[in-house]
Image (tube, rainbow, N blue to C red):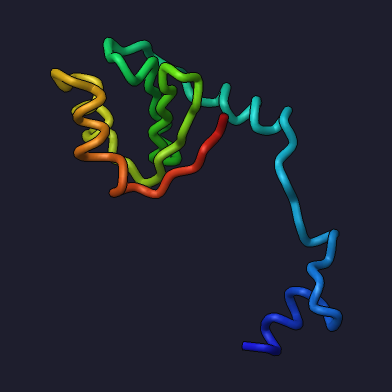
Length: 104
């Protein structure tokens, strides 16, 4: 394990700057534009979108935050969009089940 860590971080134990990439604001904004969003009727969810190539569900909440959920099937997305309560469906079937990333 130490040899592996040393290869990743260098002999000094500090990460090499050239090996680290942090997405800048323009990159995050670009990512947010890649998935077409559809408004939904919900008190907590403003819009949802889906990218079938990456199986990514994007959710924009009414407070403005945006999350991507990875590994979501198209059938799951369709069920979310057609649910009687989008927020309840999201809480019961998406949150805590699929890995997520905060985009905004």
